[in-house]
Image: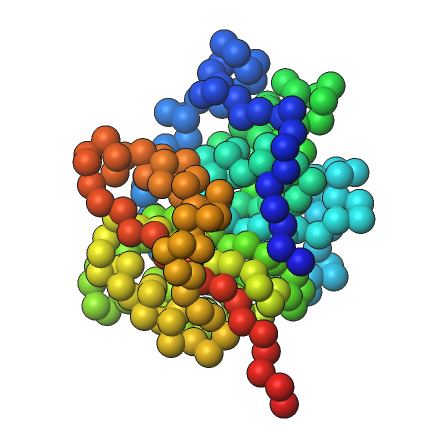
Length: 256
């Protein structure tokens, strides 16, 4: 079932600062390289199966009776999660980030925002995991569990010999099809045209995905959040660069 945004009194914090939100971490103390080697993750802990994953560690009692439905892959500093949270207040969302300092920053920011809004329970629907989505996606999510997946400004891995490290490959697209429910959506955006064409090619060639039309994208209120919700997207805007979005729908499994 498609998850739609709802009208709510919960509003996005307008660029919260340490003055307006006590305990908010300062990004300057959590800086790390823009991208990370996806094969250097030997110290990551992950569940044996989705049934072994205790989501209450991320969401507390709010996880009771709910499953994670949105996954922001390579969530960076969590900008998209912060934008989505008030729009889908009853939907559990997870950011997956491989960089230690960056995931620590996102977690501390979420904790500070939750504490600041404790009386009304805002931001309890978002969390972050330090993990490698390229390796462990099926360890976290059941078949057909997710309704939305996001790949915003992923590492382009420009060198040909490193294209196999890209977050969209034929093998990985099949894994995404496994955890994404029928009718679910994959959102992509990048400022690298070659990478955009690469992602569109591999998603279009997969039999379980079809690309949304421009009209369908314009009708989706989530699409406008892709452009400037992340630090990378804001940097591209400041540099007056171009951005190429594409959204793909998970098709029904073929009849056997």
